[in-house]
Image (cartoon, rainbow, N blue to C red; front, side, top):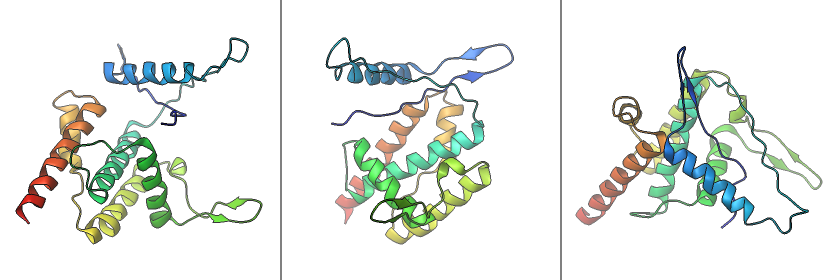
Length: 187
């Protein structure tokens, strides 16, 4: 299994406090570091991890995270995964394929690749994310007859139930898998 190249932790800042990431996110970061440490060949050839702090728009970040949840929903249904978790590689493959389908594609030439599609890194406002998510739902999910994640239920779990993103993602993934398994047994 390849090692992740990047991991993100989110701190919430208020006027009076700093709210650290949930324990699950901290554990994921610790595993990330331990996995990289296992690849160190010798003391004189250390690996370096770069830590960057970046202020992000919380609404844009919410949309980006929800988009990744929708990709997971697509992968689960497209691969008929009733219990297992889609691998990082599978999610990455689907993300690239779906972004190519929704935003255009890159042209691979002999010596270089020309970027012909927009990058989600260039999305600077919530409306761009809303448009992409709506396009994803209408052109991919509806066409395939797949269930699309309910954003209101998803964010209610996080905000009202005080769950981490990872916990809410896991719960709605399990609900989806239970639903598609039940649907399959009724057909």
